[in-house]
Length: 232
Image 1 (cartoon, rainbow, N blue to C red):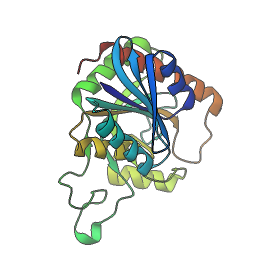
Image 2: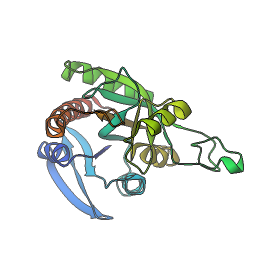
Image 3: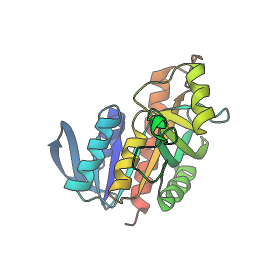
Image 4: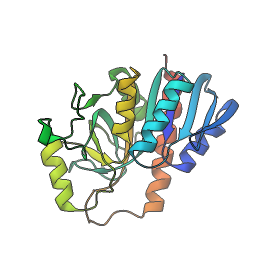
């Protein structure tokens, strides 16, 4: 069974509309919808904002629903000049940029007592998402890269350059690496999917409502096709 953690209300609502025999349960203030989409068992939930909410959500999917994989969709700021607003980034890996235990000899971003610096996304899910996105969203570009997460909205050129210099990330946001860590600890394959909403600096961006409507369409198209093709 596939666990889907969405970020945008309308995106999650549209996925729920496609669900047959839906059953809803509330855990930790989050509504988990379990049913069948395109003939496949799935659980759809909107997590809260930030790393703690995201990790709690992923752990519930592991404990209560025993999902075989977790896919997290949402929005992010671009850290790569070639990745534009509206494009999609598929995670190769994810790490937490606001973790700093360097005084104890750890690499910047590494969580103490963890053997890895970043959490590797599942290659099979990544390849599936790439193929599906190119088919159902031919109007946008799809990139693969590192997702860097922290409990802050990045909106300054200085911070953006720091993230690029230290982590070589493709995009930055506030939940993905926490979901990745929870998936890693539970030995569950995962993938983070991000629609680019801004340049993570103080530059002007497209009208947000217009972007959001576009991002929701692209995300829903992608998820429905991924669910249709997904085999545990």
